[in-house]
Image (tube, rainbow, N blue to C red; front, side, top):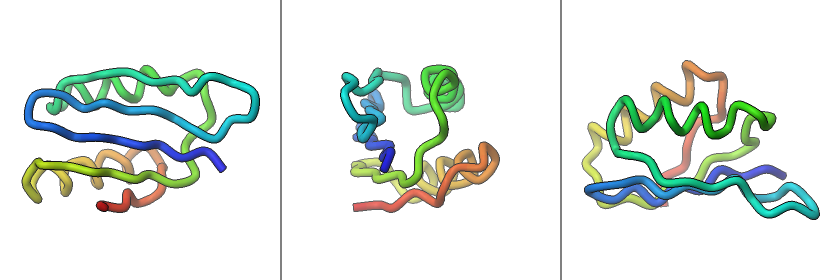
Length: 82
């Protein structure tokens, strides 16, 4: 199962797509704004979409709502906040 893991901090979002057997997971760091989310999408463009999305965050609910909407727009699963 491919899982997109995000650590959404105040100044950056660290991400990794884990679960592809035998591969180092694609990963990166982007800014926590619309441009950063687009960079995340570009970083994942060579891979099939995630089957689940898990987020840890110090960001407010507005950020998470925006990220949820972004995931829906891309056809990704609804992210789970942990």
